[in-house]
Length: 124
Image 1 (tube, rainbow, N blue to C red):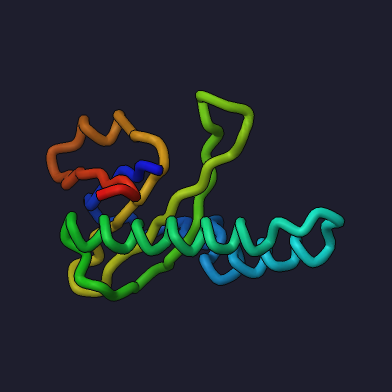
Image 2 (spheres, rainbow, N blue to C red; image 1 turned 180 degrees about the vertical axis):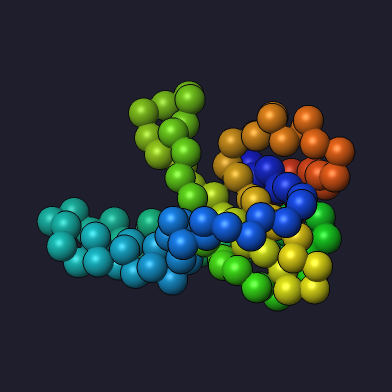
């Protein structure tokens, strides 16, 4: 697993369209309870692990450990396969900076001057 992190300017609007992290975890549990093939434990462990590394990467790029918006989950189609990947998005309280932790590199973010970017793998 590789995650790309972005610390950038303030985003103040439309957060309500994103999925709250606790709802995302609840959806994993609900899906597992209603599915004949119960992969809930694997999916839950994978999502928990990804969130752990996302916070680690956010620390690395300047997150102060608090939230004023989020954490939320967002979804992207994986260009290498027929699946949907997910990442995390949140704002910190102090200066309102927005953090995006994405499973895919968001190359268009490199156009902006005020972006702190880094990455992390689960074998670091």
